[in-house]
Length: 115
Length: 360
Image (cartoon, rainbow over all chains, first blue to last red; front, side, top):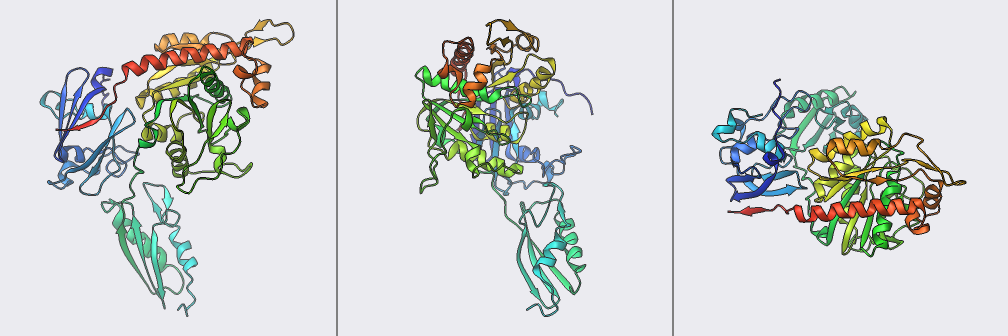
């Protein structure tokens, strides 16, 4: 496992979270960067224990396993540190910390060093 | 209907050998087994999983089938796999919308006087005229009822809302109230989770300026539930001056940081000994360690509290020292720490922007 570069506080502090229907989430960060997460991409990166093996960290559920039409039924904040989604496929267990969300930013310049 | 003498209990016992690999418990204890029917030698039942997308569904089905087939007299086992997604309790914070600031008090280990400090901070804030609540979330050793001499609250009202107790102007709720008498709380994680949620959201806190939450020592379930249930304004860490205490306190600090709970500061407790006879001071455990650590970590240092028999005595008698002896060295130290904390909370109040998800 290669070392993951540490993120600066501004890179993991959201200043705005927008949701477009069930199809995507957009986060604007304190450093000015904007991350756009299509629903299926986000569902396919779910960090919960059903989607990622807890002890080995091996991913069990990938984006290609997710229904192409999956949508976000509901999104809410978890304390100050994470987002939580109810998915149209019934999945609800993932808690996406802002650190994690910044690491999986799918934009072209971030995707190269994704977690 | 069990002419061949297969008892449901026998089947359940056999099924106890089947473990859910994620939840690390057997499927009987988890309550997964439903609708069991025993007709002659044929046993049929549902295994109700927590998600239809369970990656180990087939393995569990086969293990369940084999386990039941091993019961004497069973000729066939029919396993029906069902699922019901157990929704994580909705973090509805509506009930705490009238609470302006939630301050968590934590420590790396037990015995550093975290509850004493929490009780004194609460009482001191109330004495200053603030509306204050104190939630004793220490499931392992809820001691706030003794320190605040607060009575057990009345039974929950018809709508299941608990009225908090009242002591020294502070609204008090304790995990200790959730079991009768001197019974300990022997809980698995999910039980603690539910109890903490109930104590936060199911208590009629009313309008509060501050809700002080006395966490259990260390890092774990209760902390996670707290930060996932309500937006915590910030965390306070109580430490002794000793290095070992501090090393462990750093873990609590990292825990707060990882869950984005702002650190309001570190309090050094048992900082020095005040002799009750001559009034002189002695640094029993060394002195200033927490202040140095706070400086190194770039977090505020909120003050030092002496190791003073008067603090212990006041706590045992149910009146925090800030109320019992406000003019004493210890009472003053507690009041100073409270002031420093309130200042940090105010700073945060201006800096924290409530994040909401906007529809575009």
